[in-house]
Image (cartoon, rainbow, N blue to C red; front, side, top):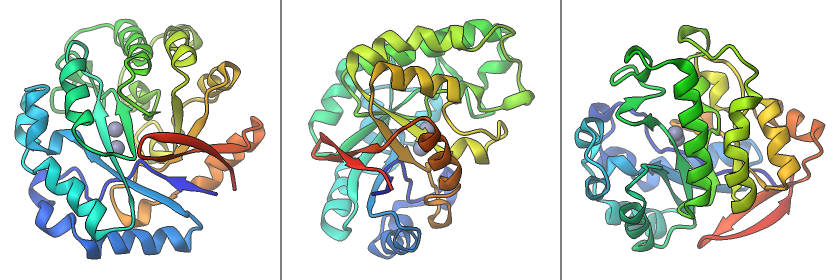
Length: 276
Ligand SMILES: [Zn+2]
Ligand SMILES: [Zn+2]
């Protein structure tokens, strides 16, 4: 089986992607069609939590205030009633707001929750507005905090899948990077990842970003597999044609590392299915 769980039904262009045009059965069908062409049987959607007004009960970052336009319960009802897709959501780990996020998630019957870190404090890792890299914080500090938080995100119990686990590398050579061996930073997340047993995402999205690499780096993935965590495979598509994109690269890496199963989710229960 192949999966694509970390999937968005629209781009991140807030003005161009109103719910009434993109959270539709016709749009969902176009994703399902491409998925079947590419042999992806297990398909779910995971819109960004911050596109929903209810997210402002969790955090009030100015970016979230700009993006929080849609109703979360309408989204859940749409996916359940008008599509055959798994119902997921991409939720941010916001330290100090775990209880509020837990409440938001517990109130809905998701199949899975994809957990992400896009912000370290007020600064964005992968978005040039609110860019953390222009605040004067050292790259060592950003990377350290990112991976410490990743371990905490795993341990929070909020999430089923840890998304794009080394997103901090997003900009590649366009932003400063720590000098030392990056495994030093990965190590900071591993205790939480191992202890939580959370599924860790292998995402082809990084290949489409400035860094031009899979998320996560091979060395990170090796540590995750040593810890015994299951793997979730996704493309982080924001358009139908990005579904399953570059999976041959992800599958080659997974095969090389001896991964034979993928995590599959239903109503937040996880099972493992043979990969392929
Ligand atoms: Zn993300
Ligand atoms: Zn995403």
